[in-house]
Image 1 (tube, rainbow, N blue to C red):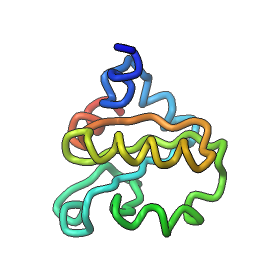
Image 2 (spheres, one colour; image 1 turned 90 degrees about the vertical axis):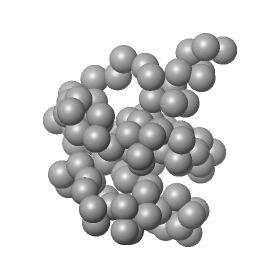
Image 3 (spheres, rainbow, N blue to C red; image 1 turned 135 degrees about the horizontal axis):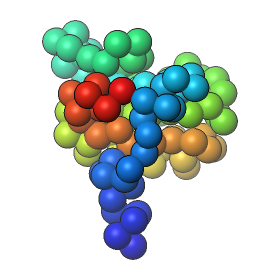
Length: 103
């Protein structure tokens, strides 16, 4: 149970730098305004409330995806939504600034 909670909030010891080197998509689910104020290089922005209608932008359901936001809450919700829609390798990267330091 604790592992599930830690993974949901992005507190696991995932090697995000390695995932990025291997081609992972960084999905920032903050609003367009938040994204414009700063983001991880090469991240794509699909706000959480728009994600269900934009899943086609994430074509390969087997490709690694790292979700991020401000604190890890929205990115955790995005991870759950992606997994429920058949995406197989999704990681909650938590807050974008801390994720940026890890990659």
